[in-house]
Image: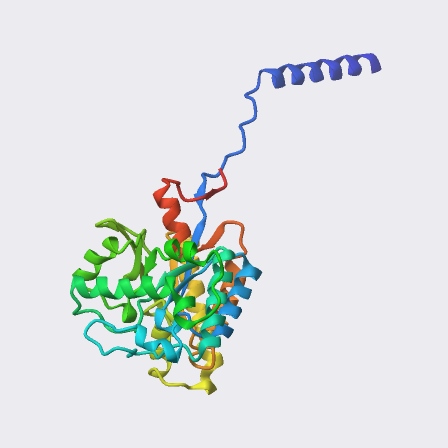
Length: 336
């Protein structure tokens, strides 16, 4: 009887083995489609205070980010050199934002520019005197751009500061992008930009994140409107616009903590929407001025510290993005 059970067990095992041999092979594990990395474009306007140059560069080193600095060229002129600049229709030596504080202040700023560029950051132009150019002609814009190029390239010599050997070559090729003061533009600006050698403009505002179009030879970036605050009302994704929203453009340091949290939540929500969705580039703009006791820089540091370090996120400069576009490279993907 024991033998019969053994034979039956052997027969069943053999049958199971045979059935397994003829069964459908296991299906391969489904592969998730490749997704583009989330691009975040962080920029700073005016680029005056030395401490903020240092702070932003330190943030970049912590997070692996590359930033764009839109420099106002009057900050490369000491008080003694201010006569080197005259804006379109303006008196010589006049500026809406002042000039460099001293020759040493200018020298320190030039050193920060050189360090930032060596670390892979993008140096763009914010024009010179921070004038509103919405009524300027093409000739006016070209004159302002000529001042930008001349002052940037000759900054050391103009101020009587010893010049590094490699400065001229760097200065001739460094500045490829522009953002208009007050984000104020006109048709003449976009006619002047390519003639003045600019590859991109970052003066636009859009209803939300978008792929930057190329128009008339210039790639055009736009600060998006993003939901913000308890009612999720749209606001331009820039610190100054948050400053006006939060405190009517006046300092209210007692509320700085709340303003920091609101700004961070707005940045993070805008990021999460793209990160979990279409992954369109997200642009955020800042100034070196510490509004509301530095609330918006505090929010930026928290935000960048969380997202720029992600393996599937790239916090890059406008110039990085443009160079990839011009090289015909697809947006970097993950997965697949």
